Amino acid sequence: MASTDAGVTGPTRARIEERTLRQDRWWLSPLATFVVFTAFVVYATVRAFMGRDYYASPYLSPFYSPCLGDCVEGASDFGQPFQAFPLSAALIILVFPLGFRMTCYYYRKAYYRAFWLSPPACGVAEPHSAYSGETRFPLILQNAHRWFWYAAVVVGLILSFDVVLAFRNEDKEWGHMGLGTLLMLVNVILIWLYTLSCHSCRHAVGGRLRHFSKHPVRYRLWTWVSRLNVHHGRYAWYSLFSVALVDLYIYLLAIGAIDDVRFF
Ligand code: FES
Image 1 (cartoon, rainbow, N blue to C red):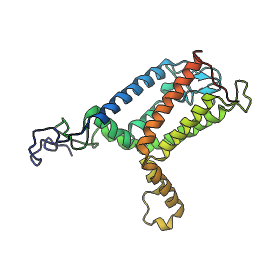
Image 2: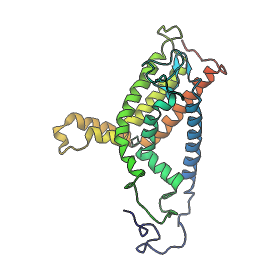
Image 3: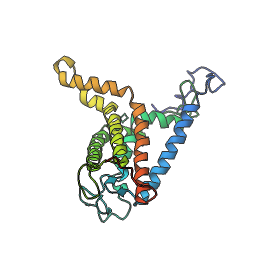
């Protein structure tokens, strides 16, 4: 629906002068989202464009996994088919995790509120007088979320593979575990919780069914995903922090600022 009558100034809406009648600190949540999300975007952009210090054997930064470009030795487990790519290897694969997060239903709510103020919070009038929702370009592209979900599953599998490899030492002998291994393990668990609690995942496993009773396996899966789905927003933030933390840890190792803590 695209109409200049559709906003809160439309003729069918109550004539209220105040932007909101809310008395609480409703602005705190969108402000926190704005600050944290901006900080992450700045950090991730800098790291993605750096093109170095993303591998400290046996740890590979999740921003650079899979490393398909002109990568440092040991970082590529799937070959280097884009070796001629002139920019940072992270940019080759960035579209998948970035597209997945940007089109996520939870993040959409968060950044529509914090960045577009559309609306900034429940019961707070938005500054825009027109509303077209996600029916036109570019926001209609948000509908691609389910396709990004399939890509995210592949990314999750690759990151899981990286964690398995992080149980080897620099000489590729099994039995190593350091703080990097632990951080990568926690990160991949959070990534899976985020990916499997996705609304598109819920639809993929249990959608379009007339009778759950005729599909007991899908019904069971749908029940599990539904339980996770309740906490999807939480997993969205936790996994955002963990992916940045793992990258930062590996960066500090790679530049020699710290040494890995070895458990065994
Ligand atoms: Fe958030 Fe799908 S709804 S990842």
